[in-house]
Image (cartoon, rainbow over all chains, first blue to last red; front, top):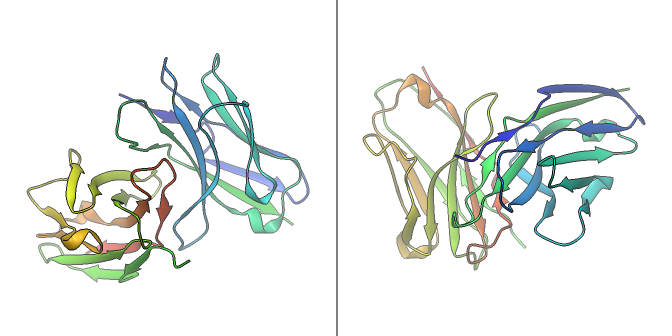
Length: 114
Length: 113
């Protein structure tokens, strides 16, 4: 069965500092990869996705992620965070031949400290 | 473009009662999903519809949960009877023809006491 591991459940970081949120997945075959953000009391919003092509993917709000097939990782990064980035971040994968079914990680709570 | 709408936003019920959630997807989106998000966990797919047909309901606890999508637009998810462990946020999402980008609604937070 497919699994997604987000290694850090909580990440505190000071405002304007860089941040990396880690995501690893268990699959030996190609998958589609996503990062979603969830602000308090709201639904999930797509930050970025990797379907194919360049391994460096740029998303909204200054976020980017790099697909590393050999390490089965898809870490999310931002060079300088803002207070408004405080939210829950979910990594998700779609394995092949699953009818586009998402498998989500357990989430990382990012807290930006002023 | 209007997003995915869900109601109610919050619901508190006692165990063994029944409850229903409603979802209106983005106009023209053929695929609709219901997810359960327990506190501290990622969303878990309960059921996926393509138009008004069920594509996947393998993780739906069918002894107490049911869902329908009449006319291939709105959908309702029902729990009867509810258990304490059903306390969660229920998210509805839709996508264009089963595409790989899903759009999520704000969710319904259910508390079972």
